[in-house]
Length: 465
Image (cartoon, rainbow, N blue to C red):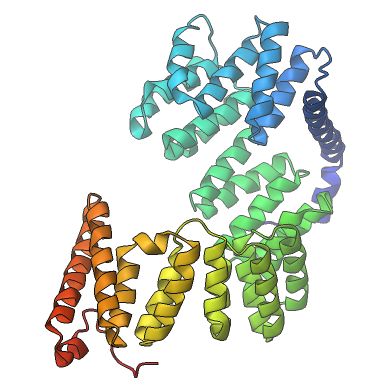
């Protein structure tokens, strides 16, 4: 639990100066990275030293910028062909973007040794999970010291190999060997948090914040872990420490607002924080969901609807926003769904639920009209046997028998094209095939009483529209 007194803060004064230096250094790294990108754009690369290239590569890796990583390595190969650090980074780039090439790379460079090289060889070994643990044990035993790059690469490898339990189990030993134990503890806490072991994450973070109390990321992660545990007051204390270190933290806004929502406390502030965050991050689904909850809790339904409409208009491909809108805008459902279809190249799951709702309401003409419009914009609806059955069934129930038969024949053709796949899908398609075949026979028989009683999905509960 977070429990920091005033005297604790005084004792941290020296560490704070260190934090400011580290923060300036981080800003400088980002600036060098941006400058390198600009130089690439202009086609004018000055002569960088080896250390600068390593730092630029690492920042580019944090940003998943494979272009800059590649350009750095090509420049480094010309300027510093003997660089072990740049060479091992080439290996990690291969591992991320072309794993097949990693095997040749490590085979062709047997002369290199070190933690990162051993991790590259482990990645190439194909070992995973518990099978990889003996090799990890050997690596830890082999080396007396692990620098920050070693720890970061170790954590990355552990995630890929699914050896999270091993990492947590060996944290004490690794901490003794780490030149930067704060880096290790943060990586372990992140891993625990991602694995939904937030109780373990809080314990690790409590230890970390005693070592490094002036890094906002540590407190943010602690607050988020407390949020997941439902310990909202403790989470707010962690947010206070994060804001004391760094005043402007967008992530802190979203987490604090969620904590306040959990406490049902100071909801106007929570809404304001949510709104600020969503304005800059319109794709943050979880935050949007919480903002909707907050609006509803204070009874501001108009703001809720306007938010969803504005976000949906900006991104009509977003099926989450569409689902939320359909729950409060039933009168404009077809308009919203069609807008979604027109902007989406794939058949979206939310459309399937909309079709189901029309079926359950026996809205036969609405099903036909929706299909006619939707199939103009998305070829999916002309190829999906289930959708075609819905339309055939609707036509059958409004007396358009020949049209119903034509749709059923088309639906059967679609099944024949898609039948070779996994068993659950094949079972589903088998049922659809039987229903379509029966529908064709009913049309051929032409007996109205049999047509009216045909209800394979058990949906005929209301009057036709």
